[in-house]
Length: 279
Length: 303
Image (cartoon, chains in turn green, cyan):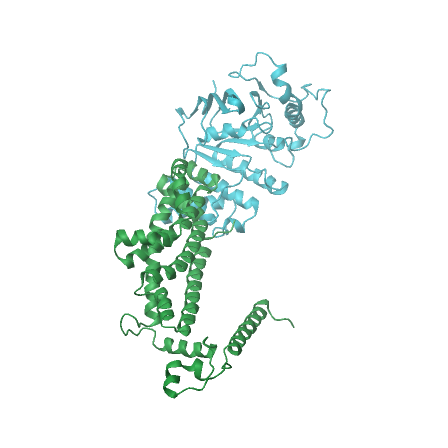
């Protein structure tokens, strides 16, 4: 009897995870040398010196801490001590807002570029120059002009997620099959109706692919942006916990960043499947 | 004398050629058709047949000349001239009903949903697709897709139906069935139809008039062949009709040899008054010239 591929893959995945956690646990056991010292001094030195504990937390430490966080995701003990749920909500909110503005700008503009060869040629040099700029390079300029760190972060998200959407929309719109356009033309369908009933559905899979790339980039950039602007958000949390020397919290944050990124990608993947048509 | 429902008047199509010159696909091209007629254009690839059809549809513009339909010069595309595309050109994200309804609602914008659906359904029934209304094009066979294309074109009750090699991508059996359907529908509705084809038998079966075009560039309309076969003809016993071979040989001869040599051999060809030929029984009509004899003049001549 052979198990289904899905099940076998799941078994291998779990085995790999177990192997990784086991190796991690073994590598961070208390094996270091302990020194003799007065109790007062030992208190200052911490567990690393007194019990030979590794400075790197083990999987059990991380698990316990994660459980603690999950029990109280939304506590708020002042500016430097907020629950992980609050921090993630700030980050997702910024990404959502910047991304939404990018959608509003990129899709109509991409339509124009895709439909008009003139606009396409005219805007091409600007896009080519602006596209490769690291979004974080805009940060000082944003901070100087906007004078608000939170809005600057949103601006950085906007600028990084606008390009893939813009280019994919333009590409998708320009690549709509001539015969579909001709169908609309022979039926005397007006420009606006044609855009919504022929070009948009035909280009939707390409546009959604661009949007999926964009959300991935936006989530990558928000962490770095929040490390710079500070205050709130998962990126700030990572940096704050690094300053607190809480590697456990840093690892937890890394894990959560990965999980949220995966969720965002899955949502967009589902939307892409909804608009994809078989030919 | 003849009712000129469609009148193509001296159109030309030129493309900028390599090295600053221009390539003329055809020029001074005249053609007219009466209301309710079925006209077929036959010619080799590259003679500009599709360009003529696209100009007639309004999808392309002539470099010179005009096209008059029902007493009015055409300007761009129109719902009066429906096109059936070679590649069916269905919108893959819409169902069969959705594709036909799209055309219907484009013509009658004020109609409510129920009326559009009922009208579309009538034409889906007409082409024999009842029961497949809610399928997407990807779930249909090539023949069924083209049926949807025909239903979409007919549903807007156009003055002219334009068909660009509509059956060339289909297998022989499906093609035969669809030809029967098209003939039945055209006879029932008195639809004026202009069709491009490569298939001599298709032209003989469907057309009232067959327009023979010479090879491009510089293609001309060489001859109009009137179909001598009776209106009530069946695909099965078509070849038993006494006029059939005279007609078929005439067209095949043209395609095999005369389409190439026409420009060199015929002098004083007046594109405004193209000779009309009506091949009949017993005439010793132009049998194969001795120079080019194909052992088996294939069904489909071009390519």
